[in-house]
Image (cartoon, rainbow, N blue to C red; front, side, top):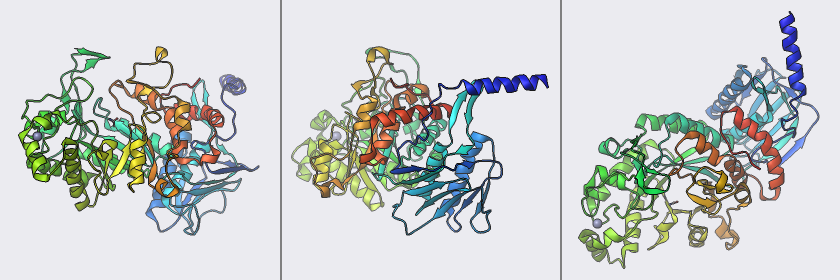
Length: 537
Ligand code: ACM
Ligand code: ZN
């Protein structure tokens, strides 16, 4: 009894001195379109029931997701049932309303002392509503760990996103990240209502996806003998680096993402950044090699031979397996940073230029991309490439990812092509985020939390009609100098939280000072889920 009393006293003392925890009332990130606070709050307990709209598998999936997430917080396993004979009170209702103007991703969330009701036109909207609900469950740090509140504020929230494309990229080639970490990364995207994961799977320094028809791609291409140290181009760590995803791993991750309403866009780089593939199959390079998986960073002269039909046969075989694995409509084919030196010297490439009546090697690159696009379209997929695919003429239906600034995106949108904005000025999370003196070594650049927050994806140069081609934005995370999950999380958090407001929140409601206040609470949330982050000033 004495022991219990002491424990009780300790608890009370602790509760009363946890004033260092932030006290902002509601802190949802990304900020919803509107929030109205009401007086009555909802109390979660072991009898709370999650009720989902009957007749749509999607809502059941959302209900089960919510059940699982709440069980992680409260160790409560809430009952889940379809609507109909559900209890009148103490329920979390996921309801469908096909007549609402929330769009396909929006929702309304109303909580009061009796129930919490999330209404949406689609299960996806319901999912985003549950993400907001999970953020209404306050978390605070205590001596024994993180503690979640059972009381949920009374609110009326209406919400829908500003942009349809809300993405994060991850380079798993410069440094490999395993399946479990990729899932953790996807969880982070889901929490921030992102809907696209751009998975950069092939590079000079490593090929990371199993292709059954070409086993050497992973047997040879996924392995490099060592890696350059820091920025010393002639000093190496002597440590092999390797790793790849089997097709079973990929299926598991695609399903994991799908359950969180996230589409994966796989990137298979061509014609440049392909040394790892050439190390495995040198016959697809201009000079036959031998080639080695790169140990240093940068851009390499050895690229796929554009004059060899077997190169295209190889790439189409690879893409056929990729298409089978990824159900989304887009395939990213890279297209960036392809030096033309080898093509200038290669008789086959020169022959192709002559035969096709091309003006130069830039038009040869355009020929390359257009030929691949034809194959993708024939297989019911759409091609995305980095903005270099504009050079020499854009493929007819290509979507452009604008990374060398916004000019490529502007040009593409003006010519009627869809665009995803990812300018290195505001969306490169491998850049420094604060004074390099006090930061871990980064590739360079500088993109602060505020820079990210203040970015707006639609350039002023575009008319309202042209602006419709800007689907949204994404941040890129290249991992040359990022070798561990902790460091990776440090680079994206909290910048990704800021990005989520760029792509989701209404431009009129954006306010950096308010974001910073909400972020304080959000960082506890991230900490409680075991994410590392950089503490903003
Ligand atoms: C890129 O950063 N090379 C797309
Ligand atoms: Zn060639």
